[in-house]
Length: 571
Image (tube, rainbow, N blue to C red; front, side, top):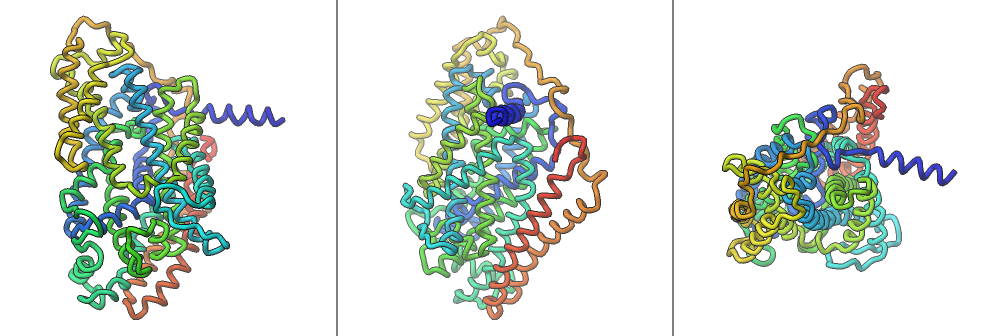
């Protein structure tokens, strides 16, 4: 019986087909709400607490942050929409499989290993953030004394065990595939976003009480005064300060590997139009812009409340001080919703070099590696530098793919000349990648500003080397045509989730919506009470927000899961 159950489970997992090695068929394209939820969920992460606080520690000014993030996030959205999405929609392939046509299996294997390892490290950082939050209620409810995870290596066995449990949940969700990721994020992202706003709004009276310039925040000028004095002061906590252009550039390159490096072809290949790249704005402006600003406010409040330098506080401690138990839940869920798609991409990358393994098995192996990395919080403590380096290492491949896809046909070069010549290795691609990284090392520019010259250098080198290797040969054999998976092999598009639903489904949706409205109303109520009523109202908020969170997730999950007709089999 045990063997039969195991065989049945494996067979079910093998059916989780995600078009890993061929174009997505038209009947599997997804509606816009999936992308809105996926981007909002992925980019409203526990690490936003780290990044938002980092702007404070950099010594950025108020206008550096407010204006720099507007411009930088807009550039990121445009890169997704006009660089990544058009190639994804035209090819319907993952970057990992499309690169194989362009650079051959050998270069693709090298890239996939590098890419997957970096994705594992990034997902590990997200898991570490979640585990750092879980330690706080564990310390409060048990005799455990788990220290903050701000060092390079783990120094507490209970923290390691917590990380392993969180990692197991992340891996399970990642195995279930794109639609499950999007559904999970769609439920979580509205509530997570409101928790950032709740923390930012409700802690402003506390900051006003510590200000020497104002006694209450009754106007935009009062907010700016408090921000200049206590939050974005323009004075760095350590090292050299970073200003407007650094903030702008960081907002652009924070997800460089995904948009400029084209890794998000894995998600956007399901889009009906390249304009779906604009759905990334849900992540950039809800997840990044507002979340980073609110995280900076919460970080300043936590440092004052604990009389501890902000650099010594982890995301869990900041969220606990600002929102209480609901903040802990927000950090945990935010870590999950970001590490899930990151782990999903890592699994796709490794699968391209393990063609005989089903995706779920690859993702399971990658998840084990990621969880092991998460036990050592070294990436979490150096997150901003890692994010910049990670994007810089991968963006040359994005430049190579962009050049071959768009520029080659316009200058008389042959697309896919490597695969059409049946070559296993493209020395122009590897040489361009390597030399561009050497140039990045030699250029006297800050890490955040290197990606533009590196992309241009890569494109020029790739064109020159490809010309030397025979990419202009007009007598190449025709490209082999790849046939999409037959429509009969997969279910058709989901029916409208708003038709034919029972009254209880509508009631669940109404309860979820009212829970969100209440979760926003209470922090505003705390803010309006000012410093005089702050302690009383803040304590009530910390009591009510967790209860509203439970109500929201129960009703919201039911609404999302049951929002399909029974005959589709999607429950």
